[in-house]
Length: 463
Image 1 (tube, rainbow, N blue to C red):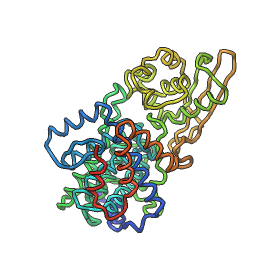
Image 2 (cartoon, helix red, strand yellow):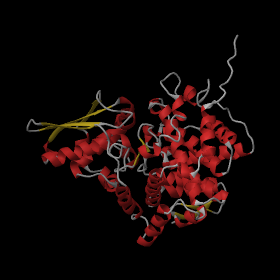
Image 3 (cartoon, rainbow, N blue to C red):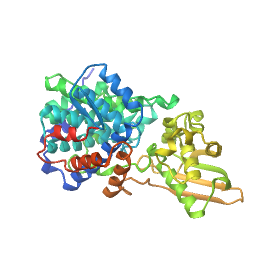
Image 4 (cartoon, rainbow, N blue to C red):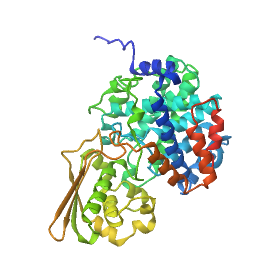
């Protein structure tokens, strides 16, 4: 029997070398500027989440585990740093309105930012350090998601939870001054904490909201152990029992994506900001339906049937189980319902937070239209490179109207501008904060990257 020697340089080690050596001057100015606007989007969403009841439940659960003094985004509460990171992840991701790296199918800011805030404040770091570590976390999270080649969803894992843990571990390790070996170990350790199931899709439960916060907390935990020379497997990505072998089994994957192009290609620039508070897989369908409605003046009562074509992997998320998608029981079901979103957009001509309230969900005319939606497999879509949508309306007068959105709006080929992001921020933070608070937060976020203590930034972003 021949025993193969382990690789001299693992993928985690390549990431560790890069992360340890990265300095603010190594990151292009356009990347740092876009990073500020991604943070602005995330913080605005954290504030907007506070009007719902799920953050209160999360805060009370975490408070049960102990007290602390670390500030929380959008709320007046204080928690231990790791628990604050967990709650901040819940707040950023809780409405499913946060950014997504499209090819990685991963919400990259929702774990990287909470880890960066808590790790930076505990380290006494500056906002320059915080911003750099956040960028680093986004880069790692995106690449880990890319390595799954769109396959995590197919086997029931939430890539935001899986990939986000690795990004958060590198973020925290960088801020705490670990060397390349320490950052490598942090990745190896967090591999045993990297998980998140999609079973919430079956019953509308709330676990998805917790995933990025738990990833942030896990990343900080792993970095703390690595700081004490706790050993983690070097081949955590590519090994025989590494991430891709265990999580994806025999499905296609590309572990080399984890370290590919670090410092040369900035995945942060491919991160999409959402124009709608719904699953990103449905955005192209919403835009296609709006375009048909506007171009042809279609009224809901004129429609005999609706046919939507989607790739089967995202189709599992937004079309199954059918009972929940054709008759959503609550706003979380509705966010992940292709039939409900298309019917609502056709009926109301828009899709915002108001289209997720109880009155909208119970509207008989919308539900009748939802039942007219048929979903078929899309053989021409761009998934996972982009999230395509094809909508065909058959009208009572015999006309058939079709529209394909091959690349979803917000994708790096059709990005929202920084001005668009700022307008979105105005709308989201405006639901929960007065104008003075909104301006204080805006100034703090867009000023990231100087010698201001990170704790001052965290305090400015409290509720």
